[in-house]
Amino acid sequence: MTDADVNPPQRSGPSRARNRYAYLTRDGTLDIVVGSFVAGVAAYVYQFVGGRVLGPHAFAPIGALLTAHFLTFVIILLPIEQFVIRRLTLGARGWVVPLRAQVLAAVTAIVAAGVVWATSDAYFEGNSAFVWFVVATVVLHFFFAVGRGYLAGFRRFREYGVASGGASVLRLVMAGAIVMISPTVVGFAWAHILGPLIIFVFRPFRTPPEAPAGSRGRLADEHVAAVDERGLLTGLVLSSAASQALLLSGPLVAGWLGATAAEFSILYATLLLARAPLTFGYNLLARVLPPFTEMAARGERPELRAWARGLAIAGAFLGVVAAGLGYLFGPSIVALAFGAGFRPSAVVAALAAAGVVFAGAGLFIGQILVARGRASRLAVSWAVAMAAAAATLAVPLTDPVFRVAVGFVVGEATALLALVGVALLRDPQEGAISHGYLVMKRSMDIGIAVAALVVLSPVLAAAAVAVRLDSPGPAFFRQARTGRGGDEFWMVKLRTMVIDHDEEVFREHLRKIRESGDDEPYTIKIDDDPRITRVGARLRKWSLDELPNLWNVLRGSMSLVGPRPLVPQEAELVGLDNPRFTVKPGVTGLAQVMGRDELSIAERTAFDERYVAEASIRLDVAILFRTLVAVFRQPGKQD
Image 1 (cartoon, rainbow, N blue to C red):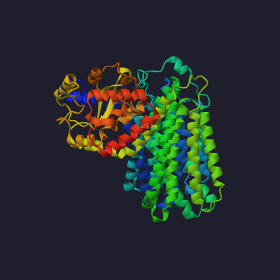
Image 2: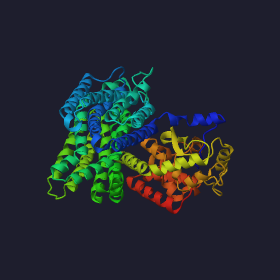
Image 3: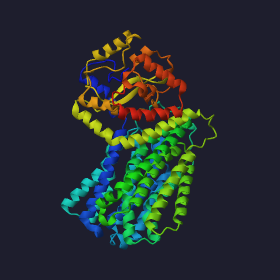
């Protein structure tokens, strides 16, 4: 059977194409990713422009202001944003920011202002205006964080992504105007302060007429009533403080251990660039927290445990990959960005890269604990990580930079292990643990899918661009498929066919399948299919069109390994009572590694039934390995 890019005909012409792909504008995940990328790039460009225009001496006040803003936002305001998202996801309406959060933000502004006033001669050239600048920074970014929390809580993920990127772009545009008019320190400060005002363009506090529902509908009242938030905000702030201390204190600790000024700068530059990917992570938290919260409210603890295991698996694998890339390219990248004098050793660059990846994985696993209201476990995990990092620093290594880098990666690795450990703890109200194979299979699905999407994202982006340039129409395509239990779901792929093609080819394909007998079995492949584009043929040859299936794996409608999902018409030919429909369909399966696209319907069904009968983790791993071998040794159409 073929994965022909068709749907049952409903209407013709461009309107049908627009309706078919309209779902791509509703999810918002891509908007958050793009918005996070734009925000990160614009933020770095803003700093680079300010540094080059003002010079190292004059830029010092801006650097101090940015440091205060970053610490305040991540340690205080981001936990408040997460708290708001969780409350709105659980059905709260109106002004959901608790008084203690408002008091915390106000105290933060006062303390920050006091610090600026006390150090104004050292860092702010005695300019008392920066006292008010830092107060304005905290206040406006408080509303920015709360506003983003409302957008994500109401599942307005697209606006969340645009607002995140828009704030940094607005800041950069104002900085550019200041450069052209009169480049001053005060002007750059105003650009930084006014950027978050863009949040009000989206009217984030507007309550929708109906409560937004997740992909599985609205939460029941009994689910919401069972949610506990005692000590949640406190635990979030404490854990954020500990995690940021682990991320940011490295250069200071190195100086305390006797590092020279040059060594201090090298470590600072290396960690600064290594932390850049976390910019995406902080914003993507808003995308994963609502569904995690819904799963926690519904009592789906086995699924959350599977996510914890999967993210840990992905984090460990990507950490090793990052260490290798950091070792090979890290020193050159740092030297290119900051100058040859900032070049770190390859080992230090590798440790920094691995540590940041571990930190990112821990950040997402932590959202499972936030969703479950277990912030105390979150704070304890980071406290254990801090203790592990401090103990590592006691090892008598002569090089302070290497010593701190080792402590950093040990601390982040410990945090990752501690977080996944407490996330796997069962709550008292839970029932029996689900079947071990299913939980482990789901964990492997999540871990490998996350790692593959991260590693292969450049390939996927390049393929999407090639599809758009090759033929009119969108890069991605979705199609109704029959999954476990006969339930239909939307499977996502890269488009490999022309849009609004003739359905007669597929109807003829179904007719031949029905009429084929055992003597002349009709294979699942459509020979010389005229609907396939030039780029589509190449994507199918290397099975790259299937990469978006990994999104289905993360959502739970598919698994990495299982019978390939059939379109409804083909499923009817097999029969929904067939054992293949008792398991989740897979990105790859036993039939694919045994015959790829040369199998008849009977042969393929027999392999699917055999997989169901012999399913195990060992078999799944073997199929995954053989899939890679088959793709590279025998390229063709993976059905």
